[in-house]
Image 1 (cartoon, helix red, strand yellow):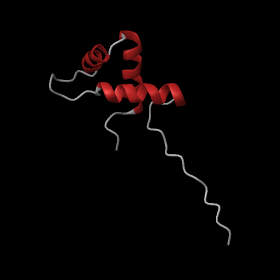
Image 2: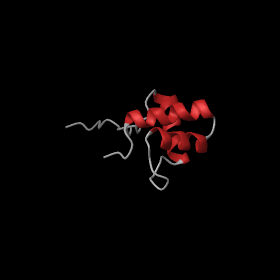
Image 3: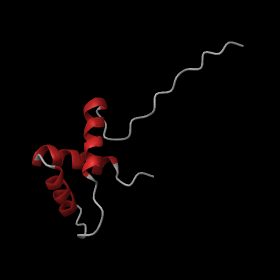
Length: 74
């Protein structure tokens, strides 16, 4: 199971675009979810990956691996 829901990922992306900073996005994310100071928040790297996925696919969720078709003849 994913630690962060699609809705939470989308919100983190939105915060990054609004704030222009990973740290500012993390702080706003923490405040929005009422997380304690030592509770985990998405890392800058995670937010960066989500943004890349979003810009390439329109989704913040993990990219599905490309599977090659099996062309075996029987």
